[in-house]
Image (cartoon, rainbow over all chains, first blue to last red; front, side, top):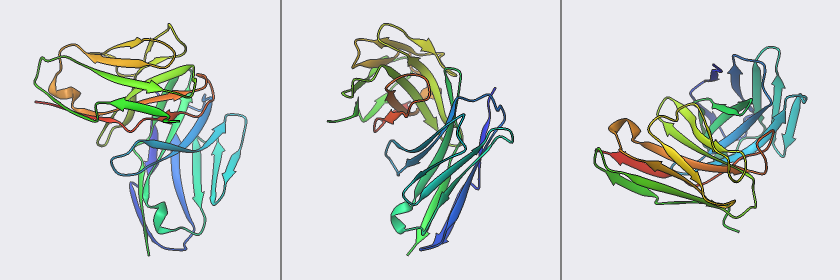
Length: 110
Length: 113
């Protein structure tokens, strides 16, 4: 069974800092990996989707990388802002099943 | 364009009661999903529907049933609620099943006493 792990569980940084969130998975046979953002009491918003054949995706200040062979993905956030404060989750698709990590709670301090 | 909507937003049930969680999407997506989110467990897939007329089990289907009523609507039914089903339930949809971004609803908070 696929296991998805996100470390650290919580992260606090000062505004303007660049940061990296980590995601690891145990089975490299995946179709894709997605990064989501979840605000308290809300649903999930997709940030980036990386297909299995891709190495990275970029959207604005966000860059996500994927290394299937090592079972790792990173989400890089440049020049962090207080509005980036949220929980960030990664999810992998294997076959018709989807597996989520438990997330990293990010706080950006003004 | 409302995206994915879910009703109700919050529900309290007693053990043994039944209820149906409703989900609808207006993006003309083929695939729809039901997840539950529990503290420390992450989101877990309950059931999914790859396309209208089909449904399949996810990781944690026991105690639930689903109906893909039409292309827009996908409901989740608890026939006899148990305290272990206390959770936040999310519905999601995507254009297709494979390699597509999922769009999530706001969630339903369910408390089973």
